[in-house]
Amino acid sequence: MNSKNTPNLPARIQRVSGGADKKTQDELKQSGAIPAHIAIIMDGNGRWAKKRGLPRIAGHKEGVESVRDAVEACGQVGVKYLTLYAFSTENWKRPREEVSMLMRLLMRALRDETDKLHRNNVSVHAIGEVSSLPAEVQEELCDAIEKTKTNTGLHLCLALSYSGRWDLARAVRAIALGIQQGKIVPEEIDEQLISRHLSTNNVPDPDLLIRTSGELRISNFLLWQLAYSEIFITESFWPDFRRKDLYLAIADYQRRERRFGMVSEQLQKRHQQGTFLERFLKNVSG
Ligand code: FPP
Image 1 (tube, rainbow, N blue to C red):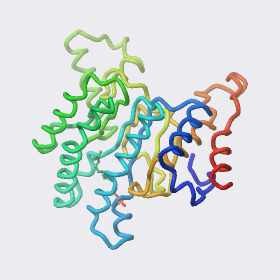
Image 2 (cartoon, rainbow, N blue to C red; image 1 turned 45 degrees about the vertical axis):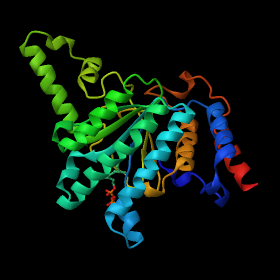
Image 3 (cartoon, rainbow, N blue to C red; image 1 turned 30 degrees about the horizontal axis):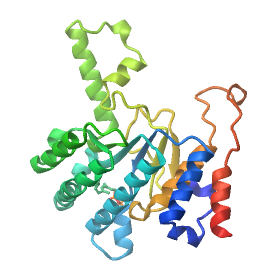
Image 4 (cartoon, rainbow, N blue to C red; image 1 turned 180 degrees about the horizontal axis):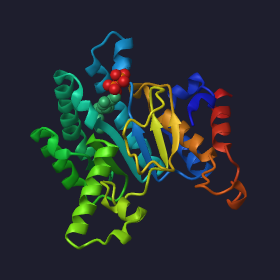
């Protein structure tokens, strides 16, 4: 469940770039299934800053660089959906100054990155109580969603003012209203119907959940949707999390046996389990 059993990366991997990056991506694609949907709890921005004697916002700013790298790398390796926990319902309880700086940062990131996301065929989506965000953020978000809506590459979903319980409560309300209006009969309520009423409607459940900064919590993220997700926890703080960490998380995922409640023998024998991780580590240490 976590990266503690994953060998530390040799120093050379820190410099993976250009041609070496493309080669790593190709190997990753050949070594197993690329998760269709990755969800990330980006944690540790504040501690990253504190360690350096910097204000917390410096951690959030550097965190935007990690977002940029993760989005680009996910698109390149063929991940279809990337959902980022950018601001939780609970984050509103932070000091007013930090909330407003985070909102400004988000607004600027959307403004600065939308054209590039569009050029890279990424479509932007949002889940959460978007109406509670400052008007300027809503505007930038709507522009980004509108501009990129026909793109066919990576679906980038930002969870903003989001929590899993909020999502479930909202779904229950919508279903209750459907019953009241005679559009749903209670006997129809099953897992599919509930899924369709969640904000992630039409998006497959995450195959892989990544959480940075070593905390072992789901923190009210996609509570329903994460039922069968593989979990990868890394000790790295989010601002330090770059594509090499993403590749390791995917390689670790490829070694897992996802049984969905079945027994091992019912599943097809995995082809060359773990070979990517082994080759990856051998190459860089050799
Ligand atoms: C958690 O670190 C991080 C957040 C609450 C905000 C994440 C936001 C960004 C990375 C920037 C904007 C995002 C996008 C999508 C452009 P923390 O502050 O809880 O860290 P700590 O646990 O060390 O205090």
